[in-house]
Image 1 (cartoon, one colour):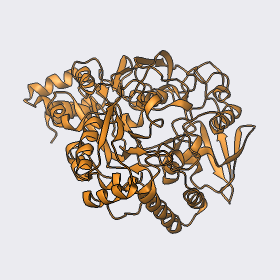
Image 2: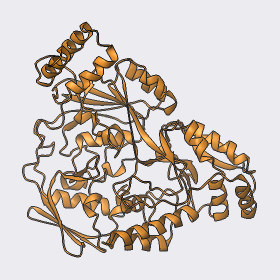
Image 3: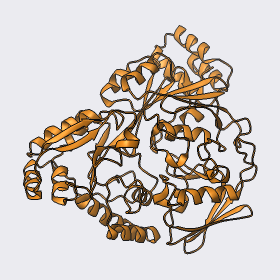
Image 4: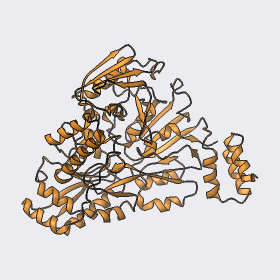
Length: 528
C-alpha cells in the first residue's frame, strides 16, 4: 500500500504539486529537510520547468577571452560555447555519439572519405538556415594553419573538404575510424560561413542567443525561440555565467544564492559543502588530469636526465592525499587512464629521491628551477606546487615557485612558459587526446614533445582497425611519452561541481567534463 510520501512523489512527478508544497507537506510528515530535498530532486527530475534566470559561478574566465570558438581555452568559454553554439555531433556520458547538425555520418570502406549529411530546418541565431557550405567552411577554418584553433591538431589529417548539396565530404590523408569523434571537439561550433566573416560574433544554432559578453566578468544569453530541438534544451528564459575565479568567493556565491551552480569545488572543503542545506556535491571520475608541463625543447628541460629527475622527485601519493583528498587517482606521466577503452596499465612510477638526485647530478644542471602556478590552474594548484617543492628538495633539487595572477594565466603563462601547472579535461579517444596536445604539429603541444617516431605511431594507430594491434601501439606510445616526454602527471582528478538542488533540478553527473560537460545551464531548470 502506498504511503502518503509515495502519494506526494506521484503528484510531483505528474506536475500536480509545486516543489514548495512538496517540501512543506513532507516536513509536516516529519521528514528531515535533507531527505526531503533529496526526494524532491528525484520527484521533480522528470518535470522540466520553463522560465527564470539560471546562473553559474565558474572559475576559468579571463579579460582576454574571445567568443571565437577556435580560441576557447578554459571552462567559462567552454561552458558558454555549449549554450550558444551547436555542433555536428555531441559526445554523451557513456562515450557514445549523438547526431546534432549532422543527420548522418558515413565512411568509405578504407575510412579515408567521410560523408556528413546535414539536417534540414536548423536555423542560426541571425535567421539564416544552416547548410552544408557553413559546415564545410567551419571545418576548413579550424583546419587552417593560420587559425590558431585548439582543434588544429586533430584536423591535420584532413586533405580536402567540400559541400555537395546537403552533404559535406571530407577527405583524409590516412584512414581514421574515429573521425566522427573528432567532430565533437568543443572548438568546432558551426557558424555562418564557418566564422570566416566574424568568428567573434557569437552566432550559431544553440539553445541560447548571446546577449551579454563581458570577458572575465559575465556572459549571458536568452532562449532562442527557433531552436531546432524545441524544448529539449534551454529551459530557463535566460542563462548567465558569472566569472568567479576565487574558490572561496565562488562557494560563498552558491551558499548566498547569487548563483545556482559552481565548478571546481576544492577537495579540501567538500565535506564542509556536503553539510550545507540544499546544496549537493556532484563529483565524478573521468579523463581529466592536472599536469606539470616541461618544454622539451627549452633549457634546462631539453635534457631527459633532468626531466626524469623531476618526475622521480614527485611524491604522487602525498599529492593525491593532501591535494585531491582521494577525489582522483595517481598519474603515470602520460595523459591516458582506465577511462579510455584501449588503455593498458603500465608499471606505476614511484617517488625515488635517491635516483632523482643521481639523475639530477648527471644532467649537469645547478641552481633553482622556476615553476609557475596559479589558483586558476586547478583546485589546490599552489599547494600542489609547494608540496612538490618539498619532495624535490629531498632529491637536492631546488624549485622556485612563481605564483602568477589568474587573469592572463591561460594566455600568458600556459603554453608560453617552460615549466608550469595546467589542467586537461581529456578527450573522447586516445587518438584525439594525443593529436590535440602531443603530436609534433599540434598548436596546443604544451610540453613541446616533438618526436617523429611518436607521430608515426599515432598515424599508424589511427588507421589500424584491429583493436588488439591498436592497443599495443598505444601502449608503446605511452611508454615513450612516460620515459622521454615533458609531461608530469601526478594525478587524474574527479570533476567536483556543486549545485543548489533545493532551487534547481536536472543536474546529471558526466564523466566527459565538469558542469555536465558544459551543458548544465542548458539542461537544468529552476524549480517551481
